[in-house]
Length: 167
Image 1: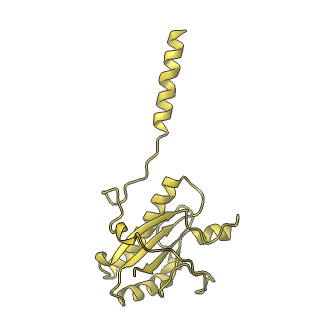
Image 2 (image 1 turned 90 degrees about the vertical axis):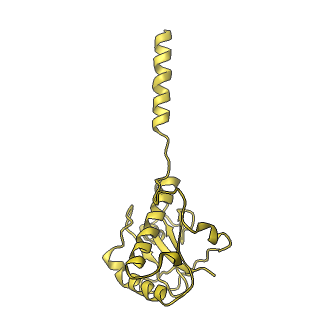
């Protein structure tokens, strides 16, 4: 009897230890570079349209939308990315790149995915000559939705990267 209890306790401990989750370390430091500089910045949502009828970015930037679970910039977002490159190269202000997700997945997963989306946009801007020191990344995960309906179109609008000038 004691053997069975001991074996069951050991097995339960292994199961619970195996379920622990941590957010992936995307940049090797565990922190987002420059995030402390954004502590006083507030988030506002502006949904006046650019072609697709929605835009959460401001200051002339266009929101970039992503497929479910993806963080690569798709070919249908190239025109919006080109517009963002023009705005970014034409300003001396810092640019906040905000990664967002839909409500599916754990908080940790969505935070990491939001960072990956923001980093993909940053990498694209870097490739076009925008200085790394001008950009800061932040992930809101699923905590900053532009809509809360239970529909595919709403989920699609929440899977995005917004860009703003840091004032």
